[in-house]
Image (cartoon, rainbow, N blue to C red; front, side):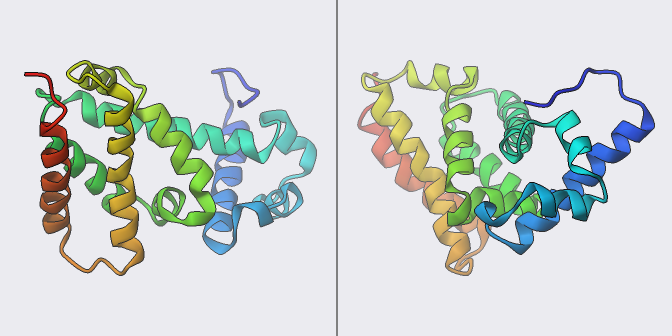
Length: 187
């Protein structure tokens, strides 16, 4: 994780912003495994030592971004009154993806970033909100696996050219999930 404390002067903030901006540009330009620290630091107009003052690796930077997305999504789900509203969960997630930046969509949809969205999905499904959701079932691990298909459905839809309007996708995905969920929910 990042190697810095909460106090940051303007130069540090600017450096971190430049690192992030350069990394986002590289994410949109190339595959993750093709991004080097040298290339990142050149694009951010900093030297390698400066990068290493803040991060141990590109992986640390990626984990920081993942944590930020997790916090944003968790915040959106925490405002829901009813954890049983599967369609609302799907709507929140899909709208987050659609309204997010191209970088977020690439990180959460592109096969090259499978490690990223798999880790994020795993972490999201371990949050308090989703852990409560599993308590309503006999087989939480199976329900958890089923929930993972929600992100797979979105990725498939996005990668196939968004063949239907987003609201129709949400309704369709909700119907698929609810029919399966109804059969495992404890009355």
